[in-house]
Image (cartoon, rainbow, N blue to C red; front, top):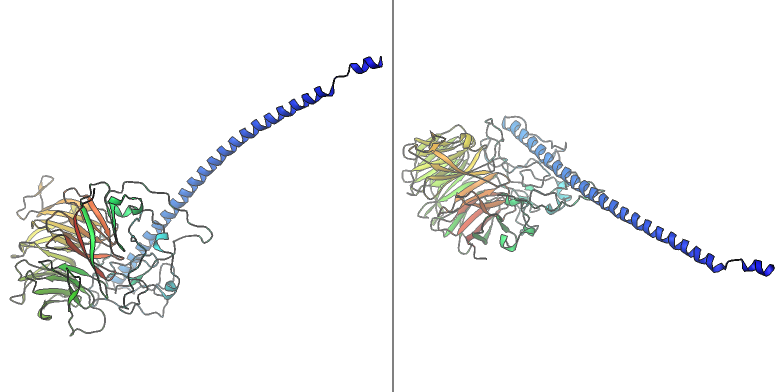
Length: 587
C-alpha cells in the first residue's frame, strides 16, 4: 500500500515546467505592455516638443512685435519733441526713459550746424537714443563705457541687411567736431516733422555719434530664442534677404561691402568698389565733372576734388575768410560743363563759384535768406540754379554776376535740377510737391503732386537724359518717375494732367530716400537712402536689380558719371566711394 501510494505522486519536473510557462507568459505581457507604453511616451514627447516649438515661435513673434511697437513709440516721441522745438518751445532734455539723453544735466548740448532756425536739414538722421541707428544725439559717457552687443545679435527678422552686412570697422578717423572716433558719425541732412501740417523749419544739429544698445526687453536670465529661418518672396525689399542663404551668383562681396541681386529677375549688372575716399567729416554731396575725370565732394568747411583714375585728392577749396567757429557744411557742389569752375552752396546762404585751377573764388552770389541745399549748372555754362530753405528757387548768371530769376513757393526747397537742354528747372519741396518751370520765362510748366504724388517731403529730383523724364525721391521711402508734358497733352483718367503724369513708383527702401539719379543712358534709376543702401531700378519694369550695402551710415548722395560705368556715393560715415557697374559676365 505504501509503495502504491507513492507511485501516485506526480514528478516535480511537471510543476517546474508549468511555473516556467507562467513566467514566460508574464514576461511577454510585460514586454508588450512596455512597448505599448514606450510608443505612447514617444508620441507624447513628440507632441510636447511640437508644442514647445510653437511656444518658442510665439515668444519670438511677441518679442519682435514688442521691438516694433517700441520703435514706433520712440519715433512718435522724437517727432513730438521736434515739433515742440520747431514751434519755439523749450528744447527737451529728458529722454523717454526719464534720463537726460546727453549723459546728464551738466553735459553741454551738442554743437549745431547752420545759422539759426532756418536749417531744414536738422534732424533728418535723428533717431531716439538707444536704438542702434545713426542719429544726431551723441551717446552719454555711461553708454560709451557699457556698449551693447553687436548689431548681429539684435533681433532683425525683417531688417535683413539694413544694419549693414559686416561687423568689421573702418580705420579709426581723427577726432572731428569735438567727438572722438569711438563710434560712427551720422550725416547732417534735411529734416522736417513728418505730418500733414506745415511747420516752421527746424533747428539744425551737428552730425553726431551713435552706437548699438542692448537687445530691447531681453531678460538676463533667459537667452533670446533664435528666429526661425525666413523663406519668403521679398519683392523689391532686398534688405530683407539673408545673403548667407543666397546662391553665389545672387550676391557680390568685398572686404567691407556687399551687394545682393534680386532673385526674382535676371541678373544683368555687376558692381565693384573702385576707390574709398576718406574725409574728416560727413560727406553731404558728390558730383562728377562732365568728362568723368574728377569727382567733387562737399563736407564741413571745404569742397574737395579727387582724380577718379587714381583716387587722389587734387584740390581742396576752402574759404579762409569765414569765421572759424562752429561748422559750415557744404550741402551741394556742381562742376561747370567745361570743368573750369566748381559751384558750392553752404549753410551761410552764399553760393561760391571757384576757379579750380587757381583755387580762388571767381564769384559769390548772395541773396538767399536761409541755407542753400542744392545747386545745378546749366549745360550752357552760364546759369546756376539754387534751392534754399527760404522757399525760393533762384537762377544766377555767372557772366553777368547777378540773379536773373527768382521763383517762390510755399515751403522750403530741398533740391533743384536743370534739364539737359537747359529749358526747364525742377525743384522738390517740403510740401511734398515737385514743380517744373520754364527757365527762360519763369512760367510754371507743371506741379506734380496730389493723388499720384509723394506722401512726404521730396528731397531729391533729377532729369533723365531725354529731358522730359524726371525722377524724385522722398521721405515716404519711394522714388517716382514722371513723364513731363510741357504742352499739357498728357492724359490721366481721361483728363489733362498738370504738366506731366506719373510713369512709375519704385518701392523697396526701408527708410527715407535722400538722393536719386538716372544713369546717362537712361537704363537705370539710382537711389540712396537712410537705410544705408543704394539700389538700381529698372525704369521699364519697376523692379530693383540690386541693392548695394557699402556704407556704415546713411547714403546722402548718389551721382552717376556722365561717361557711364561709374557712380559715386557720399555718406554720414565720413566716406565717399567710387564704384563701377557694368554687364554681368557670369552664368
